[in-house]
Image 1 (cartoon, helix red, strand yellow):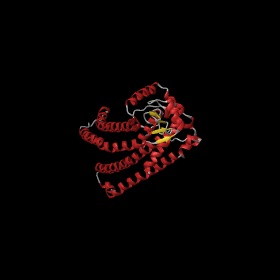
Image 2 (cartoon, helix red, strand yellow):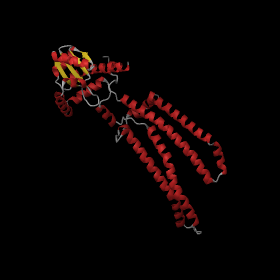
Image 3 (cartoon, helix red, strand yellow):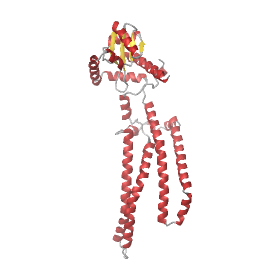
Length: 356
């Protein structure tokens, strides 16, 4: 394996890798999604807030004007202003509560409960002008720029279409009573806001999908990183306990059942056979499900052929696994590399077969 190949991030991230990335704040998040949902919530909440204002401010204004004393005093003026301002204050509070709740829920839906200072920790590369220029002119920066221009164009077109459709009514506003004109203008602006919010939601959903893919790509691992993590995890008490429990479960099952759960059968080709399983999201290392020698090895090959289990002939690896491992054991660290190569070959072959 070349140095270049070994440095490529081809392996899916392990649970530990995902957890470490999360601690660093490296999670999939779309600011567009938060903004779009909040804008849509605002479009839905503004009529509610204005209803509160209308129900309270208009009658209060009429009442205060009818009872306004002829001799104005600081106290009477303050009472008048408070009576008018209170409905506006209540409407604003309701609007802010709705938008704040929606913003928090949207962020929690994307990243869950997460508190980390890593993204705001001062680092030289963050304040280095050259690093900043690289980020701006990177592929990701270019895509963000294109996305911003596209959004501006789409939103501008929506605003234009709404104004063009209501142009005659808009011109006629000058002949209406100011209060009625304000109501009609508010309806037009609200219609524009709703349409922009709906289109932005579609854009934001696509952006969130893209952010998830980019984050998964960024936290992928090289084969060397995967092997190193396996080495570090192998000696932990949690892994040893899981290994013991796995061995007990495997010993209770039959050979055919064990092979059905395997990913590959590594053979000698006839003297030894070792069944290997690896679940990236739940295992720290590949595990030996079953092994056999001579007649049992041949039987395992027959069963594997019958259930379409991939069989890989690797004389030194099969011999080493048979001698060093028992059923239920995790693959020892000195065999991580060869086993990882076999599994990568098997996954690639299966993927190509399905694609074909």
